[in-house]
Length: 564
Image 1 (tube, rainbow, N blue to C red):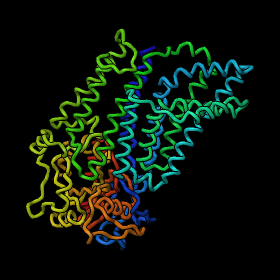
Image 2 (image 1 turned 90 degrees about the horizontal axis):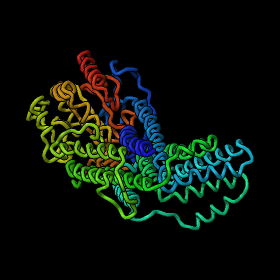
Image 3 (image 1 turned 45 degrees about the horizontal axis):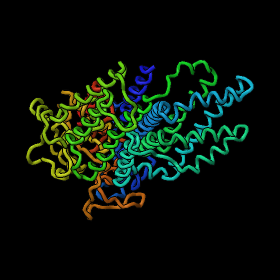
Image 4 (image 1 turned 90 degrees about the vertical axis):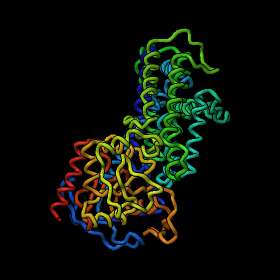
């Protein structure tokens, strides 16, 4: 039985990491408050990355970027990213529901509630129908919660949360508080009057009473489910998908509801359930450690966007190494909390889970000297924030990734940004384009962001490939445009967007540029241009298949040779 419990917990830990990476594939780093989508009809839209496109720019009202780039419809990339994000949010919510199910606030209620349905009903079908209504009530309650979050904030606010410094810092503090609650520092509870009112109405006969039974469960179990729900809502809200909070809550509530209906239909299955005990609290503590580690990502987002320099890569890794090391010691019984039951012996499944956690801890240690750590690189601050980096130095020595001549060295914003893997990049579109015209090379525009998880994943798992690195460094002029940077533009460079909002920051400028010129709002977003601003091939988003990405770069070079 313990093997099943710990296996479910371990799968939840791994899947939460994976789904978070996938979910951030949407417009996580863009601030929509100052931009507007434009309806465009590209004259030469292409269906595949290998087909040239020559659409030219139309007149622009935005100062500083007029006639700056071709108009291209990249909306399909954004739609694909949003669809993937909703699925990822649903999966994360479902896994969160499974984790909540084995919490001490809910698990003991499962056999009690099912027994009530089977004993109060005159037939098995009656018990099943009551359980189904109970499960549907749970789903309705939590989905309404997700919709309330969407209504309160609205679409624009949800999209801007991912880069708002105040919100990200509040989210960080909130997740730390949730983690402390799971670790036993205090218990999160809702007002007792809410619970008493819901419990009183649950005595009503019929479906109304069953609905309030579900509401009572949601209120009573808040001390266990609150931190999980809070993380899911924060994660969904900061991904920019309008229905994200509701979809996440649907997945969460579905995982909670299924067991009640299932055991009502097959009561004999309850005999296979493990007994309640100290293991339920161990689940809470392990999730507390995990939530504490994930909270640091929100602080890192703010740190990067505002250039505070608090959480460099090695500082972030040091904190993670300590957190997961303590988790491993806890699983071994070497670290206990006041509310833990005595651990008389170490079970084999718990030992295996401790080995996995401690092995993961050791895996992160080489990262302190610059090892790429590809499996978790999406969560870490960029490689260039590392003070002591042997990895990037070795890449520079091996590949000599192209550097412009002295007369063409990037100047603008180089004090704020640094290209990954020792590459030389321009951080201003016009400056990079001028250099591309001078050397007659095609341009690779990389719309990226400090908080963009998948941008980091591309830079750590795809770009280091020898063919990719040499192609970008030697055959393209790389222009990286950060859509979420909070550095204020000089007064002379600030302008009004087509929506009537003032563009005040570097991030505002490039996010407006991406949406107005390319009709896309997700990162990473790659555009290949000729020096005279012809689109060489269709833009793409994140592509973790190295062969496919190499083919994309080569197709751009082939198209460029065809128009030279």
